[in-house]
Length: 190
Image 1 (tube, one colour):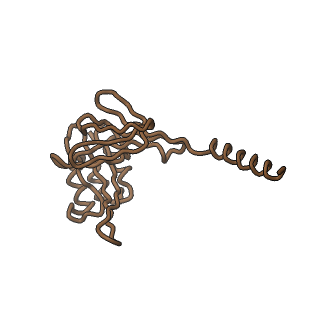
Image 2 (tube, one colour):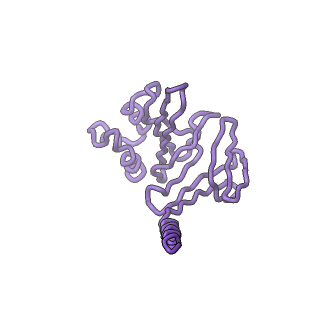
Image 3 (cartoon, one colour):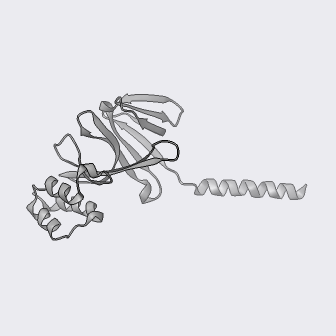
């Protein structure tokens, strides 16, 4: 009997300790009208609807036109990020993670694995840049060869900054340095 009490106390103690250490992560949906919701889960559909379930269990739907962003906050830096719905064609877009933002351009990333049938998966990996004042984000890098090569895409898209084009031609920015490239554009280009 005494052994069972000690075991029970030990289990309770471990539960309390691990509960206190468990990472606290919050996810908040912001609307363009200023409303905020703490959410457990969310999704978007192709019909322009953003659906989510609040921490209170309420299921909600809003039009993407009223959706602003999803903000994730946690104890670790990697757990803090923002997602926005980014259009890349008139009626086509995706929820993308904001990687770096500045006064002239913002870099977004999306990676998604989809089932392509039993035992087959396809992965979408794309990086897009949205310049201030533009409606559609431009594809600059990813795994879709139909969109052209990285080098050609960045030369075309950033042609408004000769200093950056010169650095690209001198190989000062490689494929892995896209964040630094966009930051250079924001800080050094006119």
